[in-house]
Image (tube, rainbow, N blue to C red; front, side, top):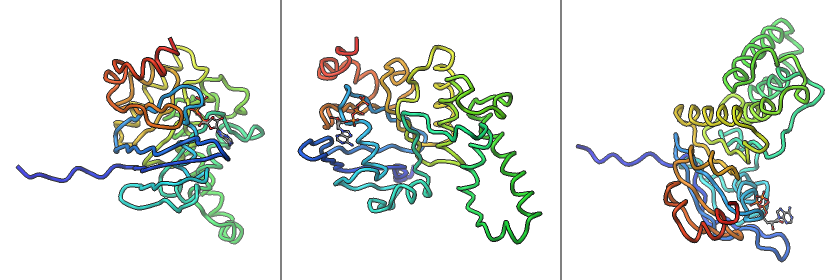
Length: 260
Ligand SMILES: Nc1ncnc2c1ncn2[C@@H]1O[C@H](COP(=O)(O)OP(=O)(O)OP(=O)(O)O)[C@@H](O)[C@H]1O
């Protein structure tokens, strides 16, 4: 038997720290997530979960280092990280409210496909076939993320809330992600939508995507996550498998007890 080295994590962060003036919002936070793994990040309100995302995706001024696979990407800007496959969906839905669901998706796919304006102007027939291909791709991605075809011509504010959340994730994923970071995707979702979300997360994991999930909805995070990191007051409190986290008295005191 050979002792093959384990594959590198899809994303690794080390010693992340963020200050807002005198407030230390995040201090010495390290974690990693592998391809085909779901890491849950939980903690009480104000524990630093979203700040941890901002630090990872370089939306905040921070200390520490970030590696995507084996590449040190600490100094890359957020769009540079996204171009390498580190994608993030935000807590608030963010759409172009005046475009249809499908055209929102087309806009993301077109940006990622990155064809310049000049070829479009000089070769209009090529532009028409490119648009048709993007529209087909948009329909495929939307259906894959559980946004049914009958909603594609509507504007996002006019579709059911559960579909809006799935659309947000589809828009973040775009043409693909190595690492997908979701910030409270289950917020406001009811039973059937929650089940659909859990199925989607498991499917993406099975496809090899590394998922990071900030979530207050304990049933969801405990049922889908492979490992959980608990933050409290900007610091790591515990990491482990869901059952270990649920049994940890420090966590129960800091968070689960409070949530009960
Ligand atoms: N832009 C900012 N300027 C100043 N303080 C901030 C800023 N963003 C976050 N904070 C503070 O940093 C701390 C961590 O906030 P953060 O939003 O990361 O917590 P959280 O764990 O995501 O909370 P929640 O579960 O309520 O979303 C809080 O004390 C918050 O008030």
